[in-house]
Image (cartoon, rainbow, N blue to C red; front, side, top):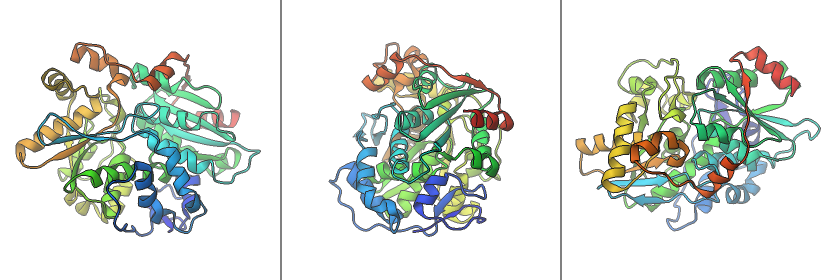
Length: 425
């Protein structure tokens, strides 16, 4: 299996090369040269086993192939249950049972397990760059904390993540440093892409990415969608809270290789880039809008390149999906109503998917849906608790992180300043 750039200007790479690089040399994102197909998969297997069997074609011929079972065993230690809600026609795919209480834990641990097995110059540490709108940075920090030969720089938009998210991001120390950037998530993402695409800087500071632009982050995210679909009795129609499009593309890739996944709908917050595109307008990136579903505050989703590549052109992509906009008032109302009516407490991101589900059930009450629940509501206590009228219990792993001290360094949204910081680390 070889991997090519979405922009077509880079030589094909092996899986190990693509994972180590993070971003293709031409600035594009790595995708399979051709999408494989998987055969029959058992419905009663463990998540790690399903992941290994699903991902085996992508690892074919690579030195990491012999390590795939062990990599999956390390990455998929937390459960990802698909449970039936009290709401008719609704299931919830709970992806927040990992060490940082967010779905990003699966991909971050998988990437760390891969990079830990790739040979590198031990005299020069590998610097992992990660832009985060809330959850990615903590998952990456936890996955790589104290790993020899690796450093992690977490960039997040100052004052645009929840207080508990900010505390998580700055709670590691050691080989993990948090930078609070004066700007938006898109500014953080531009700093990361600019650094990765700077050959002179790469020569001084070997770097890779841990965002969903990294193939090593996106591939494992296919697994929990595929595993959940195998538990369903019919093709699993799926609603995914969507910001940078990595989780959504992973679901579409899982469907493309043969898993029984039906319709895929993107639940977006007030950032309208994707809803406008699926409504028929030309794709247009714009500045991110701050919302209470902050992990989805993305105006220029990087994985749009992979979405377009998967379907061949933008018109084909529109025919294969749908994106719905949900504003803050609707998110708050959804959280409040479900806590009062059926005792379910959702994080703001999961609530966007629940709200979209309610729209879709109104259109067709016969169709069942599975919503991806991307984070534990306790991470957003300042938003959720006033709406539900009670304290939300904090998971044990999150409580441990919150008990540690935390700090973050201020960083201007300036590529030259960031490059100097990296050289001086």
